[in-house]
Length: 555
Image (cartoon, rainbow, N blue to C red):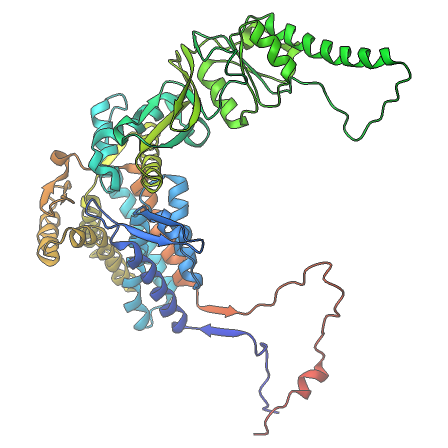
């Protein structure tokens, strides 16, 4: 009777209990260690080689982890963290991972003492609530229109990045771009859509200092017939179309039998008249520039150049939307529906310039552009990619500030304040949750500690000094100056972080740490569902008889 029953197939691997906890914690720590050195202004760069031999050189936490191919499931979910952080607030991708890794690291001791994971999670969540409360307390509101303050904030955000050596350049670009495309939603809310309305054009060549934000858009296209059409128009009237300016061909093969020769001419004439009609309808509005997303036949091109109108064809839909936003035009689907209000008159200058080997069309000096292009120049492709990544972060930060104009101190000062406050609070907590709560408080110190490590100062001395300063609560703004590693007042050094970046970092880190702690079983080797159409293979159903046929060793 006491024969063992095999529940799981042999091919399944199952790990459970503390073994899993340790495995998960080790994996998360490994991920955190990879990008630990990329935190702060003295950060190292990582060079990643992919299978195709391409290189990525970066210190953006998200960009590094995105390229990694990880086998361990817990490590995968850590990498997801930095992606969420990147999509939500755009900055703090490295801090999230370091913090989550640290949270799990301090939990390891409790799991060895056979604490139950739910107890640890309860304490962590309590710590999270209190940490957010502390953030609210030390945050200070700023005026979004005060450019110097916002500039300081964005600079401290990209101070940790590779482009910090170019000073205010990237920060200026980011602020210009985001203030341009901000849309007021009323009730003091502002929406900034970076993905849709800010295009970053990377053109190798020139110097980084030549990068600028255009008061309008640029795109990689030339006019249809360069010799006949103007390449420079001041105050152009722009018409945007979404339809082909050529004769419609039959959908599939159409055969027309012609008996008389004159019919052939009639056919051609009809085609020509059709195109002429369209062109006349468009030219009625006296445009200077016609842009279409589809094709434009030679004949239409002839009519336009005769009327002195420049035309551009086969433009990307996204670019067309940006032009519409920039010069105030409306994209029209059929030429016979054109109205005067659809013509864009907001642009001050249209011109085609040659940069490097390519022609670029610029529509600039717009009156109130709601879309813009950031033109990046630089010596090499790798450099430009890195600058673009940094610019994305900087734009996200200035977007966050426009949305929620509250600042918290940077340089590890926020984390130290939170840590000190939680340590004091832990004294009032009763029961078993007190210890994990205190450990969570200590875990927050990972960020300033890492900053100090990356500066190469004496970590223990610096940390003790900082803890001492924060413990008596004299100044919440004391932190580490990331460049020198000296202890400084963040308010004077102008090292700030956006409030919602910090809040999001804490939330994501702690919640994910709790999630990974709650895993107590990993079953790998789950059978894949059979692909449909792979041929009918009969499902093997184990009956009770089969279970007895297993060769069970006699006891």
